[in-house]
Length: 340
Image (cartoon, rainbow, N blue to C red; front, side, top):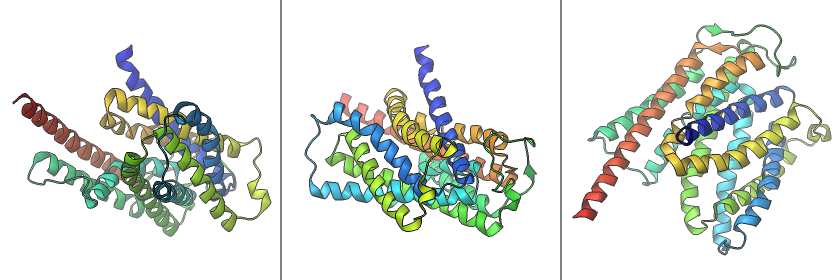
């Protein structure tokens, strides 16, 4: 049973993310302002994480220099506030399925950014290097397919939809092509900001290794940043009210389960099976989102979304395979040098 636990946990993680795509889309479909949503989501995450950070890391945390604080403020703005705000705008223009599909290109984007910053290397004369290059190309092909090709439509369910909204488009066909294209590029831009956050965070965490406190501080700073943006964009007091509806559920779910619970679960999986194992489970969220969004939101799935999603998944696996082969080769070389 213990051997199967990591598989069960990654399934739970991806199910949580799939539900996040669906609930976020449902909240926006019911008229919630996406900028206000980000503020409430980050505030909920902050309130949830701060007590744990104080209890477990406050006494052991190193001092926080002002320079490091400025770095944390910057990466919080780029990787959380800006990424989530752009993601919200993109989701209002596209679908939950597209959001899940583009998430598969995150490891490829992160690798590309790390390559530009010379954290990663690409040796195209080796098989792993060729695999990573093929992965990047496949990711680019998938990213280009999503906005520019829709193809035939598939509707899995035609009756009443649990999370559907009458005042939003019931079918993707009603979304204009220009709006869909803008949404696709914004979704990729959001993932690029997220990937940049992952890369830059590796530098920050060396100077401030208290991971739980660092996460809580980033959520707090992001709450302040997103509040300023939301106030500048939306000043209608009615938009800020949360009732007992899907808006409140989405805020609490994304703030507590997505930011809080999955943080611990992902850390546990990485410790047990490594980051590659976790990254390889990402397509599960896409599969779950495709079927759930069709049934619960009434979204029509297009052939272009399926082809683009498959290309992104293919690119993901090529990059991860190349990376894992390089790590295995490096570990073998280090072992040989140590034994000699």
